[in-house]
Image (cartoon, rainbow, N blue to C red; front, side, top):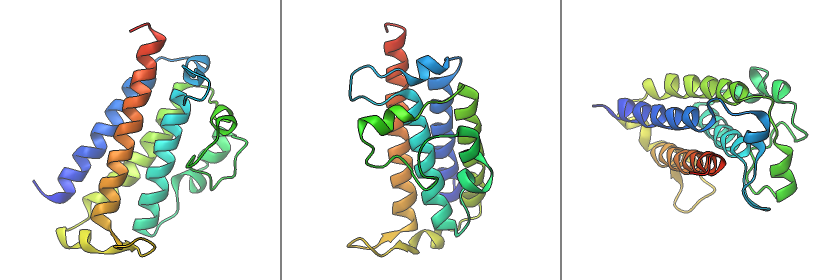
Length: 169
């Protein structure tokens, strides 16, 4: 297995968890917050997808799916188009409301497709490229992609957990 295949498999797993977490839920269920300051399924999936979109587009030197493919307009959120959800306060989390699970999975699938298209073309040597010099040590492409996968899986798992709470399980 190549590094590109391994990365593709990891992003495929994120996509599977995302779909399982939101499938068949209503807008109200997606917006449900199990406690006052908790994150909703809608926010968790939107945020993990925005981070993936932002970070992969930056590493690939391309535009984001969110702004380039009209997803920001389709969501119609009262947030800046550059917003990824990082550091959101409780009122900002509450502002992430979506009309359907299909909207969330549609955006996620579009970002997933762009991501796997990008990682499929990577060679092992590409992973050593520095993509962010603002950290010490500087962040390589490998570290950035693994960070995105790790963050995505954590948030997708949280969304699946909140889904379980909705059904009492």
